[in-house]
Image (cartoon, rainbow, N blue to C red; front, side, top):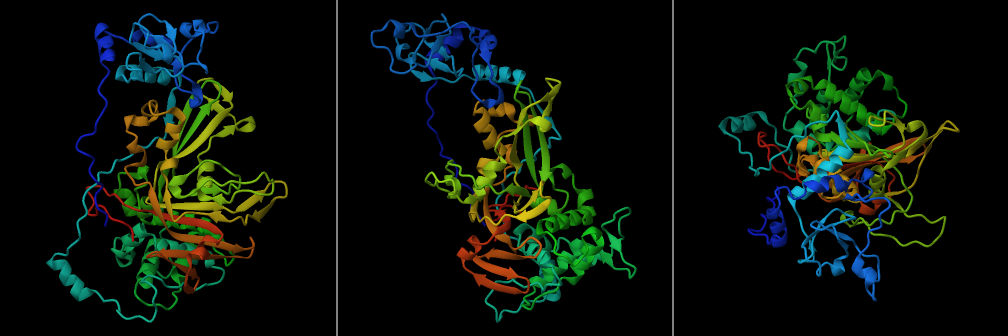
Length: 572
């Protein structure tokens, strides 16, 4: 349980408003109306808005030109709003009028206060010019539901629940030969099924998914008595009358793993159901763990038809427990390099596939503990690949040219453009898929990338949210105009926490055709290696040196809506 965030101080000292700006506003009914036609917005966010100038004009400070000791550097030019005289900040105090505008950045400046001043009407005029010059269209834009933070309350059973607990429950054994925490149980390999065991171990210890099944939110005994829905290929009844449901089989595995029994468990029924539902993947050959992960979540989503029908938030990924835990929303901005028109689309995702980027990036990312490395000028020496650099590459603008040209709705033809991805909504559990299997178009073969990936145990995703990416592109003043649906900056991430903690790492070792999957679980700040039926405790260095293929992070603090029975909790 986490304590509520500290309250802000009672009074925050703000600078007093500029009296000269107030005097200028009172002297005119609409003081900034004449500036609208003089404002110029720069495309692509490459520069701030500025004042439109005559191409043949060369504005300069008259005082600096006539002075015997001119300024040592090119001055920042200001234009008086009363007489249009141009001068630099050094000679602003000698000007008879007070309020001026910066020609390069379109910001108000008080000559008497010798400081930048803020005016809401002036900023509104700048935003209106930018919006008219570079409209942003949004397709399939979901309306993000904001979550209100509420206090945590412990659950206390009423007399009827207490009676059921005493009469219907079986207490777990207090003594155990193993010193491992409850829930650590090996899974037997049924013939090249290490990819299944590795993903199942990560799913079994995902805190929101674990709490859902262990709180009996999906009961396999009640689900089996329901009639299968019509025209649903994922709810199959065999010739023996058995009802196939991956959610029910997963519920059985949860009960077996957390029963206290330490002997390895065989998920044979789960494998049989998955084979029947996913017939194209039914074989004893080695499969890809990431493809199996996607397949399982899709089948769970199809199985939980009742949750899907009762939910009113299908666009938010709240239609089933699989999407409520793993689903997020990506934002894609494609900007025409010719006219600056931007098209924005939103797509749901249940994981992030990242390319290994061995190139050295000097950007300092102190939030996630990454420090800038100093390297000699050696072609064979490259910086180690880190998860933060892969995320920076994921959110880096990508140029679309040649055959990938974007059709601009404003130019009415295909143009070169820039595409930039960002994360609009973070999921409760964040899954990273590292692209270690590379396809060669020339040789028509697959090869594995054995580069080591450094990843933090605590991860802050704030730099990769849409709010941060858009702020770096357009600036703080233009950010509210870029956000769609009139929502605030906080609404981009739905009020969710941007800080994550790692709890599972799926690794791949060996060759592409004869490799082996192993899962490392982090429980109570200790690491355990789950290698099929064997579960052993390992050191932290062993996990860091492994070839990570899938990384699972959970939010440090979970925020629920006030309508839920749960409130604020920390995953354990």
